[in-house]
Image (cartoon, rainbow, N blue to C red):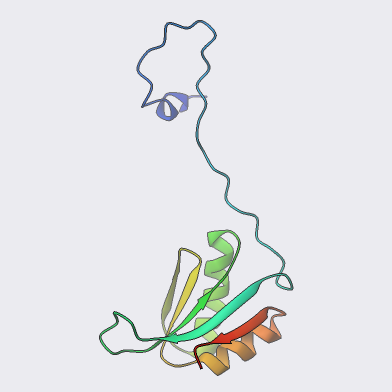
Amino acid sequence: MANDWKDRLGTVYSTNPDFHYESDSEGEAETLPSQQQKLVVQLDRKQRKGKSVTLITGFVGKDEDLKTLAKILKTKCGVGGTSKEGEILIQGDFCNKVIEILKSENYKVKRSGG
């Protein structure tokens, strides 16, 4: 309760004696089990100055779990990458290898874009 005032920075004053501040904190989505995840793997070159990246989308869950999955993929492919906003970017064309790795981790994987 010591940091309760930080949650109310937008509320200045209320004359209503029954007023209770309600925060708009949204809970993060629970991570689905790997068997229920439907991931899409595609090769992407848009707005990347001609460099190709392997893009994995469709992950439903917490950012920590997304970063853990990204770390596994980056380590097994031996390249760099990033994870943000439910997407994983792996540097280079590793679509087939990423699909094999995800299938071995029991994810449902679909290739998109040829």
